[in-house]
Length: 119
Image 1 (cartoon, rainbow, N blue to C red):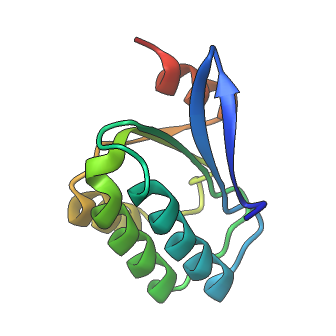
Image 2: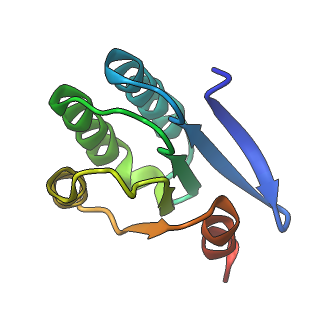
């Protein structure tokens, strides 16, 4: 679970999903783990930061991320993604639309953390 960890920023807990440099099946497996961790938390309580820097996606991986994002939506308060510059726009739109989540994209983790922990 080293790829999933709680970090603290401005006194608030943020779940960091570290997809960096992952590919295919590893992305799918991490997405499944994410769903289990988030759905174990209280509703509307989780701040999520996903870092996709250097990740390589298959269509199956994007579908698994969309499934997990939809399943854990009731538990998530805010979501921020970084490292999505090479992420196909169609996949991002599918994940956002299927999960019905407001997913914000940022250039850096620091910008994402500021958004997540702002009042």
